[in-house]
Length: 136
Image (cartoon, rainbow, N blue to C red):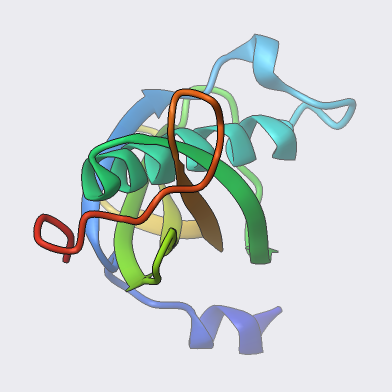
């Protein structure tokens, strides 16, 4: 565990996209925040980036390299930071990091990170090109 902690970043990468508070209803059987809830927060944040990039509807098509580094506790402030990594013809890869602030301490720590892939879609759900003039 010590080795993993030494490799973790000390500052978030990307821009702040969302912030929320972890609530008791979001806990698992161990009374930590459920990983699925954290993943949904990441999907919301990365979806904002994808929609703003594509200027259209988007759909999540993959989540790669999801790594949980530390648990999230009730009352932690949960912040999702994101950055656009790549724009393809119809797809976008977005890196999301989740950082937490605990007990009103100003220090944040990395808890989770992943790469989400989205596809730009039309109103019928068919892939469409990403508008490259407005992306990146």
